[in-house]
Image 1: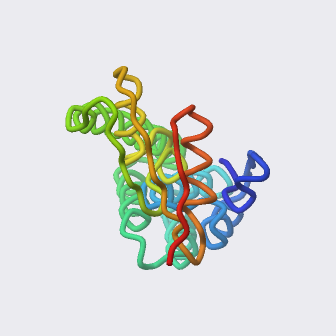
Image 2: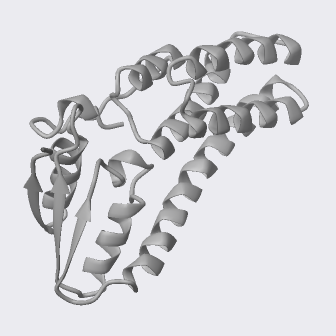
Length: 202
């Protein structure tokens, strides 16, 4: 994942091998944005299944319940996080044995990531029809690829509008106190070659 705390100055990709590292990444805003947090939590729980040395299903389920609690407590108000964790736990509980649990939770997390991108791209295509050539769009906070698995919700619409051949301009608000607009949205739009102007919050 991209370490969002380093943006816009440094584009750094980080890799984790322990679910506790993913929990810390969620807690410290290395990853942020509801969809991104939800899928990161799902992958964290899948990683916990791979980390565990459990030989029996009940033992592995107990390990996952503990890992789920640790991951959930990083952002207890994030609805997508509880959704992602609950979905992976249900997959684990429905599996027959530990090998099936490990395989099925990884597959489920990957499917959640793929579904997020597909949904965002569909939203982008539909939303792009609302805009005309030479429109100006104002954004607040960050609802782009960084906040999702990789395409974006609001910024996905902007991307799709540009890709449809329309000339658009974007005004991004700074979004204090974490400055998601200036650090993340402006970064994403500039990276994609979209005309963006940044305005400070007042």
